[in-house]
Image (cartoon, rainbow, N blue to C red):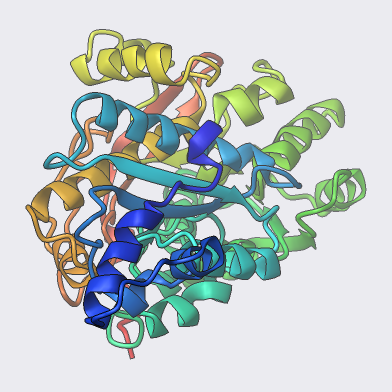
Length: 431
């Protein structure tokens, strides 16, 4: 990813000049290269709360799983990098260029902590944006809040990112996994009131939250869940679990896991000649990374949720924003898949941060960045579904609160009903 994934250059001379002026000595001091190197390593927070006056770049840090079992989600970071390339090509933000430094943690929380420290203390990023995953972001949350470094638009649907009293520097972006589970429960109760349910879920916070929401949404009818099994994110074979769930007599299968294992689950279910109503988590509702590898015919009828437009859906063919998306992909991310929902996710999240930075005017202090992030009013990403808007406030760190049920018709996702907001009414308040 070139300089987007690599280290950022630093203007050592400018920093040295500033430090020399502050020393106010009468003697001319020639700084050696070793001293200059030490100056470079001084964390931004130790110098100023905002961008150094001599540096017109807006430095943004990001941690992604470019390798490992969740590498499919690395497309999010690549799309964000491409988006900021586009912003820079158009003049940047108020005359400033964005320097996006995206690094790999392989979804390892310890690596995420090391990488985040490096980004903040050595590479002097102004904020962390869009880093992926619940465990990795939980690992760095205390550190970033202690340092007063914005942790914006976390790429995870955990409810932990919406606790402004306790963690005023951390904000999520997407709808919560728990609320998504409630949506599926509401749909099942209306469309399939008498069918038995089986659940195959990823054994981490992501999987537990969605499963919890499903149980809450079913309420007194949660006993319809006749079987549930968990699997580790590193697992590559789930035939045994699916065999057990099939034998339970379930007629609905709710799957909650990453795209690669989701593709395997869809393929295995078809090979077993089991035909449940297949409900797939939003994070894996990617035609490119889940449904195509599973086989489009095998994926026919799969149900999920969405809050972004699908570039592969013919109904959006003449939409000006999807045309702009297609042009963006051709010019700035030609190796990406236009039907990859992870690329669209990254584009939309980066667009939201772009709006926040535009609202900052000439004040790029960390405090003002958080103030503007908590001041989004009915903002709609150009590739969000109609009716889905972003609203935040000092006590509301849940930017996107709406979703729509969709079903795969063999070529594209088709909507089921209207945008759903009711599942988001029962949310935990910050302590």
